[in-house]
Image (cartoon, rainbow, N blue to C red; front, side, top):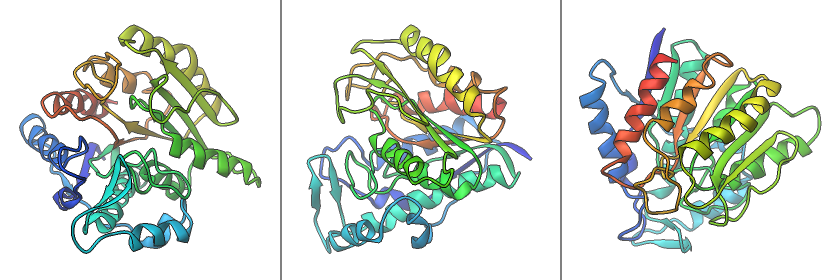
Length: 302
């Protein structure tokens, strides 16, 4: 069993939002370059698209049809001011989910102790039947469902993962004892998507004020999310790994440091050895790969 597996496919760079959009193809390439320099022992695994029927673990067929019907032959379709489709977007969204599932499968099947899905477009804002916030399909939730084990999704993106919360709530509300997925999030208050203000069964939200830094983040993890996680007793942890809470990222106003993205992995080391991390946000191309480097080093030692 290898300590850390990394999955990606550079074809995902073909998904392009409108010009000057923060969720750009270069996010993928700067991380791939970093891994080549900092982790020469890791051979990045080539990922493949997910079968469309697995998307139904999170979304109805009408949502798939809407995305496909609105995928343009050329140019862009604007789903909302933040979320755009180009001719390759539907196929690349399938590839993004597939990358996440392959990372999960490597851990569940015992091929790797931990895994990182270097995927785009991201997923945690994608609700049951709504694409939004740069996200088309919900990568983390689909991977959790496909794992068939008790899974805790821990989201440290600067924005609340409203889509993941929506899907977890729907699963719990569906009855039949479907409390096999839980969601915990740290996120900045009073910004997009203006959600994540309350807790509910299988949901733990930690709002951080504008300007909050490492001390506030670590206090939220240790005082609220760790007890929640210990009570849930997961067999798998999936990190919705958004690095846009770093102090250098101007998309929002949190001030985390690179070490925080390693520290958060270390806190759950003894609770659950099986961990998968899926890329969400992080838009400063100079510092994003540094944050990811710290995160991956912690995963490799987890």
